[in-house]
Amino acid sequence: MAAEGVVTAGTVTERSREEYVARNLRHNYILLLIDAVSFPFGISFVSALTILPLFVREITDSSLAVGLVPAITNLGMLLPPLFIANRLERQPLQKWYLFWMAVIERIPLLLLAALTPWLGRTSPWVLLWVFFACITVHNFAMGLNMPAYFNLYSKVIPPRRRGSMWGFGGAIGGLLALGGAQLSGILLSRYGFPDAFALCFLFAFIALTLGIAGFRYVRELPASEVPPYTPTVRYLRSAPAILRSDTQFGLFVLSQAVHSFAYMAPAFYTVYALDRFNATPRTVALFTTVLMAASAIANPVLGLVADRYGNKLVLQIGMLLSVAGPLLAVLAPSLEWMYLVFVFNSIVMAGSSIGGFNLPLEFAPRPQVPTYTAVAMTGIAPIRALVPVIGGVIAGWGYAPVFWISAVASALGLALLTARVRDPRHNERERDFTTEDAEHAEIQQV
Image 1 (cartoon, rainbow, N blue to C red):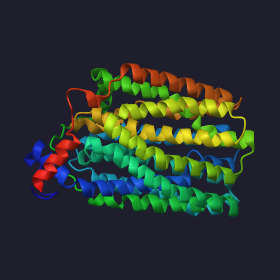
Image 2 (cartoon, rainbow, N blue to C red):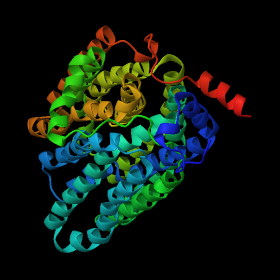
Image 3 (cartoon, one colour):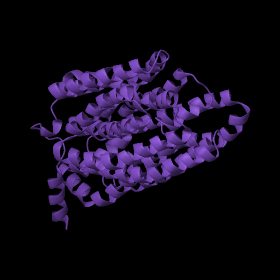
């Protein structure tokens, strides 16, 4: 087969594509694994559950401002995909768009690293506005990149290798993030606001930037099926019809929309510990340590479960613990119990990322991966964005109602997923080739 860049879409058969993927699997697996490792490591310095809420609390006591952090994070990551998916489906290659958008995604962190020491001392309220502007750009760029990432990922990694790649990437990244969390704690204790946070932003920028370098070298075949041009307005109107035509996919998205209210609680775990148990900044760093340590264990275990038994089961495990976490928080008699809450939340995040992001790829026909990914994300974006803000308003009267609402929503979403959604991997019409197919093709090439 000709090298990438020479092969045209018309010369690629399904069989030759499978053989190409198998032959380059190790190369691509390693490059995407590097990103899967660097991402949790970099994010440990700017965790939206621990570090960023503490940053906001250094400037204001507003619960609403704290709730805006996860709101912007969720809205930025989940809303833009539908607006870019139409264009990405018509691009033969994904990696160049993915790389340059990832560069844009990381620049705001460098800007915060530069401005925080100055504005933190002279104009804290200006810094707060700059902070929200920067995390908005950062997360919206990430959202614009999501369909490209998942399209590339689904093209070069077979379905029964995806869970393990994310799982082991999350594990290694989690172990590295333990060091990052410890370093964050040392910085917060030694330097405090604003210098410690500036260093956290800088370290996050460096780690996340190193992770995307490999995107340029992924061996990706051009898409063999490129849909015809559809005007953006018509595409935006027609895309939601997938939820009706593909009933199982629609029920999956509905279950995740209901479950979105579960994300109300984690946004307030840190400030809850600060207010109720008088936790210190050093304790907040320990929360991050626990979060990452649990992630290092949960990700590979759930990844292997996903590859062997399906992504639906992994998602169910995460949703079950998203019921237990808020209940444990509201009933916790002492600060020590909050560490278990963060353990549960780490498993929830691992289950949501491995199961929640991989399931749409298995529902989707090959040419429509960006659209299915975008619909799954954008369909729940308004709820995910509003939930922390609503939680911030409710938290003004106390944290207990926030936690109870989260627990009930988690239970309802889990019940819907369990009762009505079939695992697409077990459907008779398999949309992607299996690991066995890939290995057979690789043997033939050898």
